Length: 166
Image 1: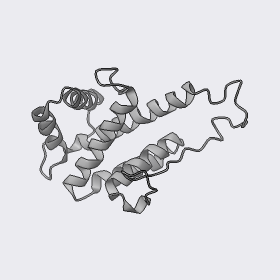
Image 2: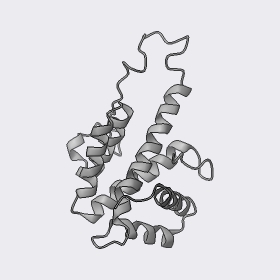
Image 3: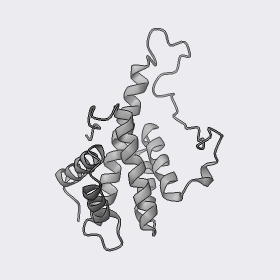
């Protein structure tokens, strides 16, 4: 069954609203409906995850554009087709962290964001399928929670704009 786009967007918006409003009861109910082994809306997990990944990617692309990349003052000569997005991982003390130290589901979400930033849609889909196939509900929950928070943080201060969910 292919979930309706409106259902995916509605659920993503409800997750954002519950998070922004600190509505722990609603948030717990929504998350449990997606990630439990016998959750009633598991078919929406990957599409909702993809919705938040896309929101993160849009925000990051907008930030790159806002910082003047490829403007008249750009001296490196790279155009968007030559640009490659990467990440530096650090721990809570700002020390370098190895990617293999990250939970596999969270690592796959990060790789999905990078793949989409680098215009590799097939790899982004593959990475999201790895998250969805993770047998541990808590790993899937952690991955969804992180990308939800990333989308909100990248949109600005609390109470500010809602993440651009497409």
